[in-house]
Amino acid sequence: MRHCWLAALVIAEGCEGRTVKRLNKVFPIFTGRYAIKSSLYGKFQRKGFSTVASANTGINGGVAEVSEREQDIKHYIWPDKKRPRVCIVGGGFGGLYTALRLESLIWPDGKKPQVTLIDQSDRFVFKPMLYELLSGEVDEWEIAPRFSELLANTEVQFIQDRVKLLHTNDMPTSGGQRNPCAGSVQLESDLLIEYDWLVLALGAEPKLDMVPGAVGYALPFSTFEDACKVNDKLKALERKYFGEGSPIRVIVVGCGYSGVELAATVSERLKDKGIVQAINVNNTICPSAPPGNREAALKVLSDRNVQLFLGYFVNAVKRAADVEVLNQLTDEGNNGMQQDSKELVVEIQPAERGLQGQNLEADLVLWTVGNKPRLPQLEPSDKPHMLPLNGIGQAETDETLRVKGNPRIFALGDSSALRDSSGKPLPPTAQVAFQQADFTGWNIWAAINDRPLLPFRFQNLGEMMTLGRYDAAVTPSFIDGLTLEGPVGHAARKLAYLIRLPTDQHKIKVGLSWFTKEAIDSVANLQTTLTKVLSGSS
Image 1 (cartoon, one colour):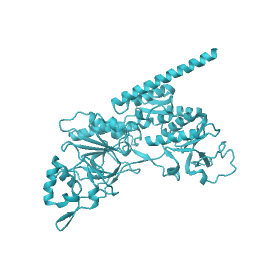
Image 2 (cartoon, helix red, strand yellow):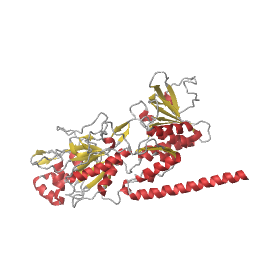
Image 3 (cartoon, one colour):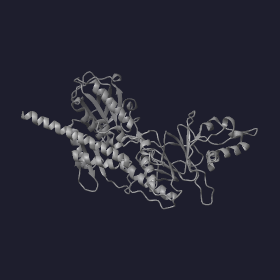
Image 4 (cartoon, helix red, strand yellow):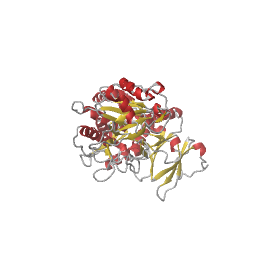
């Protein structure tokens, strides 16, 4: 017998006290140190178990025995016993926007679901604008607001925790008896949350373990915490080399969108105080980008003297002290650069013949290649309740974004392996995630109200990339061959992202903040120009 019956007995009917009293007469398990108390969720001792506790008990002398593992499980109490329960794991574009979509829909009486959102961080992160943290163009609260602020005017409940384990139940069949829940989610705090509908939107995390030394010595750039670490490291290097002739050396691994945007932002920040090198296994940058975006990026990188190592892969990242560096390096093998005593060494090898391997020294190595989905582990079971996954660990879904074989579970964003109409995997981008969130919210509404679900169709609205504080490239999909570059592209990109911020209240606050900053910058630039003109005329 599975664990769900235990919560159902104690929580059902909304009268825990009377239920427990009746059960105490039959099962002494509910008395003394085994008593179960009703609460939303609370703190308790963790035992570090890796599986969901089952409610199997042994009988010894008429006394039901409960293992220590069972005592550590604490059940989440949903506010309403009748309304549907939707659990969303992951608070990125897919998870948060699904919760907000469910909140915005019009529901029949008694059908509006209770929604609980779970994320390991207390902030929602607008990832496409993390680069602006390094350039100082935005403040933290603008692109990384707290969930408590975003959800303040909604009924969505937020829990900051990590998901440890998923459990799915057999679904009711026609004429069969309904299970008390479709499944449950166990968090690392051992809080157990039962659900009627589950949304998997956990996103992906950087995969640094592909290359020796990358985990220990390279910094990823994927989360708000990553961006803060990189910013702090750059500040420390700027202080360290202030007034010295030695430049700050930064290596960016990967020349996809993220790598190019990061290289452009860091090179603009450091200017002549730094040397930025970017490594890519392909012979071009951003191979999947529209030609206009790629050409604009190449121009900016060239103007800022970013050194591109195309057709190379990283063999290892090591501490300079652990590497035996040759005393004499030819100018060709050293790419014409004077080798300073740096903290790290990146070994690169050519992906094709005709090139030679090199050792590049660096103060900072930034990693932008390789991601892995963060889907949690499933409870071990003798029944086939496993989620169908593809080769990289994404859940296989049908066109309505329901996980195959699990009609009560939806997956979207990096957690989903859905393909477009041509059979190509959908790109792991923000616009895919928030479009899927719109469909997921609607399809949960349709499923609860016994309406047909809609198949997801991705609409490519175009591609954008930041290239610095006042520079960007925007290629809209509705005008062939058009690419907005420079300040115009920068303004168009910020406007597009302002529209995509999660709530109206946050849009207004951020919009006013950006407008104020632009006005101050414009006045400062005007004063600088007038000063130069007046000083020149005198």
